[in-house]
Amino acid sequence: GAGVSQSPSNKVTEKGKDVELRCDPISGHTALYWYRQRLGQGLEFLIYFQGNSAPDKSGLPSDRFSAERTGESVSTLTIQRTQQEDSAVYLCASSWTMGQEYEQYFGPGTRLTVT
Amino acid sequence: AQKVTQAQTEISVVEKEDVTLDCVYETRDTTYYLFWYKQPPSGELVFLIRRNSFDEQNEISGRYSWNFQKSTSSFNFTITASQVVDSAVYFCALSRGNTGFQKLVFGTGTRLLVSP
Image (cartoon, rainbow over all chains, first blue to last red; front, side, top):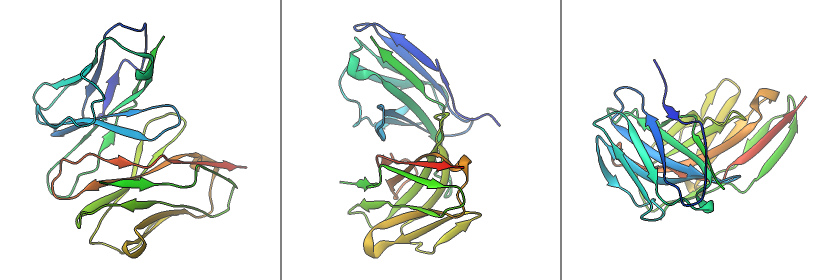
């Protein structure tokens, strides 16, 4: 079956503009996660969804960041009034939560460049 | 708080050498999971292994093996007879284990360069 997909693959935006990043998880995966990877660094957790609710938003860096999810499918991460420090690769992952199959499967990421 | 340390920033080896990537973790949880992911130049993270805190058995999968030692809070990864295709950034990660919905805490990664 299809893996996690993300769009766009690359996004260049001007400082101050809003951007929306999209994630399509693996069908049937109830959990969905957003991470950010700055150049040369590890991944930072942003938020996760259990179905369409977000029990843990602790990683969102500021109130300019928000995310939503429709049922157990598509999620959108929105960054308002982008800043240069928002430049990073934004990765989405999804996972089962049944049994012991908790592995998170990652999408290819969206590379965001704020100029 | 949870923390993962990968002290090796970059390792260079010649093909067919064995190489070990170190991972040290910190957690106060008694139940947790440890993971290794591979990030090739294409950028997409590839899941390699998950290990729960109650299973200290070492695991071997082909040329890959993992050594989990709770006594030293380490979960090291060894590639035997490395190949050029093993060149990638490898991340060790940790999650809490009490439910299926848990964020991963990642180390900063180790870049492995395997030359012919």
